[in-house]
Length: 417
Image (tube, rainbow, N blue to C red; front, side):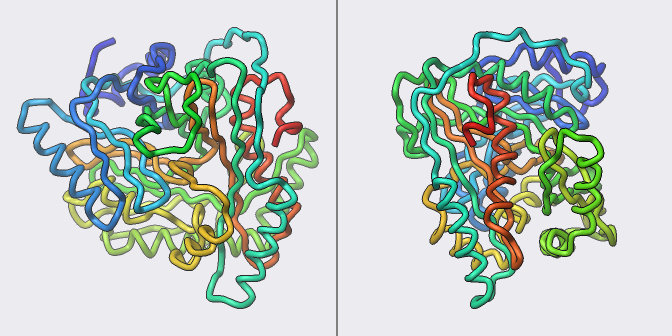
């Protein structure tokens, strides 16, 4: 398998994607697997630490990629993550090498099971009862203020008795998330101020944002652009008949369809100025992960011109109401007032953009910030008029189950979340 440009990545045989997954190590700069391709990046020619504030970030990315192209670096790209907060710096790199392949084969090798990992310390922020009260507070704000939706999150902060095996976690996530976006993005040393994680005995070379997102924010291939917002969810059931009933009920739910429509309308409105044509389905469909059903709408468009990069589009869309709320500034204010922690890269972006402007950006959800034995994992739920605190708590617990299962803990996920 050779080091290749992105122009040739999709043409490689799909089975080589499994080899890229096996070659990932904690020192790897970036791993990303989508329904269309798999990437493994190593090393760094340049690093971009720029806040996503207006056009500053996409303009900086364009300048860096243009300079790398002039320096004879083939078809360079940036890879990495953008945080939720617009004032915090993104962590994007121009990798020294990028290997590419088709999508991961649905049948991946069985993962050798190690001894279960045990938790040394665990904090739930906020505590479950306080999260229920936070949902009630948000619903109250909507009755008195110009706020249609707000996304409220929970965090689990834990220290394990031994360092996390990042490669094993990534492999387990790839098995759980065969049709979504599995990722591992190297992150900077928290001592630089990017995180409040306890340094402990962690090896900061192996700090990563790792996860399995079901949600595509934006992809661009030439003039073609795709966005696939998800909003409105239902916890799945192990009973097949009940599981189907929940999917049908979700599709018919007035509350969930209202929440979903807010997101779709905002995404379409953000894309429309960049597109010559934009197609927005009239009705959502349902899509599934191992733990949840989601309402889904696939939006497609044709860009006005090739100067509009995937980085430009992604930062114009971010944050959508799927992870923040609506109107955006009102929702941000509510999040800052109610959530008792900084989200960091959770509900940000993770993906890539090459020098032609093509790229894919997933929403950074179902993820954890892991460094050595320390980690933070997150989950959120969209709150609208009619939301019930206990139901939203159950939804966040199901979402936390993705990472809790991938960690290989000795405790059952439902006993932790």
